[in-house]
Amino acid sequence: MSYRKLFIFFNLAMLASFIAAFVLDYNADWKKHQKEYYRQASAALERKAAAASDPEEKKALLAEAAKLKRTPLEIKQIITKDLGRVDRCTTCHVGMDEYVNPSMANDFTKNPFKAHPNAAVLNGNHPFQKYGCTACHQGQGLATTAKAAHGKVMHWEKPMLEGKLIQASCAKCHANFETLKGAEVAALGKKLFNKHGCQGCHSIRGVGGIISVDLGDIADKPVERIAGYNFDRVLKLDSRTGKMEKLHHSHHEDEWNIQNWILGHLTNDPIVVTPNDPFAQFNPEPVAPSGMPDFREELGHSGAEAITAYLMSMSAEQLPHRYFVPAPAKPEPRFANNLEHGKHVFEKYGCQGCHGLGGVKGRRNYNALGPGQEDPKKDMDKGQEPTLVDVVGTYTHEELKKRISAGVPASAVSKFNEKGPVPPLYMPAWKDKIKGKELDDLASWLLSIAKKDDSGF
Ligand code: HEC
Ligand code: HEC
Ligand code: HEC
Ligand code: HEC
Ligand code: HEC
Image (cartoon, rainbow, N blue to C red; front, side, top):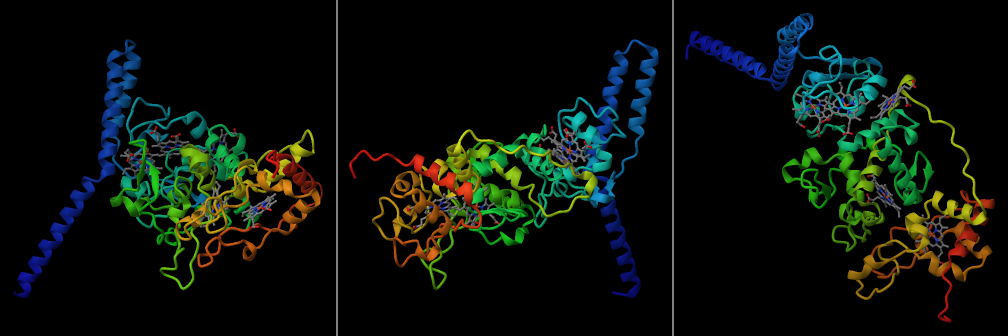
C-alpha cells in the first residue's frame, strides 16, 4: 500500500471511531434517563395545566413545562470537598436534584425518576447538595452507568449498601444512632451483637474478647483479603424469591463484598465459609474449621441483617467534626440485687458467645469432648464447650471465681480425636477484666442457675 492510501485509510478509521464515540455518547444510559425524565415531568405539568381553571396558573405551569423540555442534557455532580466526594448520581436520579425538582416530591414510581423517600427528614437534615449521595448510600459517585455507579463491579470496595444496610452510614455519623429515628435496624444490630455474645470472642476497637479479630474496622477490610474463601457455598437471602439462594454464579465477583462476607458468617454455618483443613489434606498439621458458632437459628435472617448493618458502620474512616453527631450520656444501669447484676456481667463480657444464652447449652468447639461422640472422624464436630447449668453446681463460690479468673488455656482443652486438630476455642483468663464485685456477683449468679440434680448422682 502506498503512503497516500495508508494516509486515507487512517483518516477514514479515525473518522469512524469519532462517529462511534459520538453515537455511543449520544446513546449513553444517563442521557436516555435524563431525556425521559424531562419528557415525562413536562407532560405531567401540561396535564396539570390542562386541568387548571385559573389562567394565571395555567400559564405558569406551561412555562415551567416548556423550561423543563428545553433543559440541556448534562452530567450533574455534587462536590463535597470536606467529605472528599464527587457524586454524579443525580445525572440519572433527576427527581432527587433540588434544582430541577425544588419540591423534592413527584409522582414517579420507578427509579431513576422517583423523588427521594422521606426527603423532609433526609434531605431536610442533610441537604443532598451539600452531603451528596454516597455519604449515605456508598457506591461509585463518579460513574455514569448504573451498574458502575451502584458499585456492583469487580474491585469496587464500597458497593451501594443494599436495603436496610444503608443504616450503617447513619451509625457512622450518628453516635446517637441507638435512639435515632430511621436507624432502628442498626440499633437492633448492636443490641443483638451484645445479647448473643459476639463480644466474647471479638473486640470492637479493643473492647471485648481476643479469640478472633477486632471488628472495629471490618467495613474497611479489603475485598482481596477474602477473595480466596469458599463462597460457592455461601447462601444469601434473595430479595426476589424470598429464599436463601447461592450467590448467583455469573455475579460472583460483583457479589463478593464485605457486606456479603459478614452476612455470610451469620446466615450460614461459619464452618461452611471457613472450612480450613481438619483432616490435614493440604497442611502438615490439621487445622480446625472456624470456631465461630452457627447463629442461624438464634438470629434468623432479619437478625443477621441487623448485625450486618451495625458492623458495616465499623470503619476507621475519619469524618470531619461537623458531620459527627455525638451520643448523649448513658445513665449507669441499675440492678435490683446482686444476682441481677451477676447476670448482667455474664452478658456484658459475652460468656454466652461460648456457653450459650443464659449458659444453658455450650456451643460447638470442634474436636473438643462433647455428648454422643463415637466415630473419631465424623463426630469431631460434636465437640462442645461446657454447658454451665450442668457443671457449675460442682464448684464452690471461691473455686468458681478462681476458674473464671484463670481460664483454661488452649493446650489444656482435651481433644476428642488425638490425631485431629486442636479445638479452636479455649476459656480466656478473665482476671484482668472481671474483678471485685463484678466477679463475686457473676459467681453467685452462676451458682443460682446450676441445675438441681434430683437423680441422686
Ligand atoms: C446511569 C444512570 C444511573 C446512575 C448514574 C445512578 N443510578 Fe441509581 N438507579 C438507576 C436505575 C436505572 C435504577 C433502577 C434499576 C436498578 O435498580 O438498577 C436505579 C436504582 C437505584 C436505587 C434503588 C435500588 C433498589 O434496590 O431499589 C438506589 C438506592 C440508587 N439507584 C442509588 C444511586 C446512587 C447512590 C447513585 C450514585 C452513586 C446512583 N444511583 C447512580 C440509574 C442510575
Ligand atoms: C442522609 C442519608 C441519605 C442521603 C444523603 C441520600 N440518601 Fe437516598 N436513601 C436514604 C435512605 C435511608 C433511603 C431509604 C432506604 C430504605 O429504607 O429502603 C434512601 C433511598 C434511596 C433510593 C431508593 C428509592 C426508592 O424508593 O426506590 C434512591 C434511588 C436514592 N435513595 C438515591 C439517592 C440519591 C441519588 C442521593 C443523592 C442526591 C441520595 N439518595 C442521598 C438515605 C440517603
Ligand atoms: C455524613 C454524616 C451523616 C450521615 C451519613 C447521616 N447523618 Fe443524620 N445528621 C448528620 C448531622 C451532622 C446532623 C445535624 C445534627 C444537628 O445539628 O443537630 C444530622 C441530623 C439528623 C437528624 C435530625 C436530628 C436528630 O438527631 O434527630 C435525623 C433524624 C437524622 N440525621 C437521621 C439520619 C439517618 C436516618 C441517617 C441514615 C440514613 C443519617 N442521618 C445519616 C450527619 C449525618
Ligand atoms: C466462639 C467465638 C466466636 C463468637 C462467639 C463469634 N465469633 Fe465471629 N469469628 C470467630 C472466629 C474464630 C472467626 C475467624 C474464622 C472465620 O472467619 O470464620 C470469626 C470471624 C468473624 C467474622 C469475619 C471477620 C473477618 O475479619 O473476616 C465476622 C464478621 C464475625 N466473626 C462476626 C461475628 C458476629 C456478628 C458474632 C455474634 C453474632 C460472632 N462473630 C461471634 C469466632 C467467634
Ligand atoms: C471463647 C470461648 C469462651 C468464652 C468467651 C468463655 N468461656 Fe468459659 N469455657 C470455655 C471452654 C472451651 C471451657 C472448657 C475448657 C476445658 O476443656 O476445660 C470453658 C470452661 C468454663 C468453666 C468451667 C466449666 C467446667 O466444665 O468445669 C466455667 C465456669 C466457665 N467457662 C465460665 C465462663 C464465664 C463466666 C465466662 C464469661 C466471663 C466464660 N466462661 C467465657 C470457653 C469460653
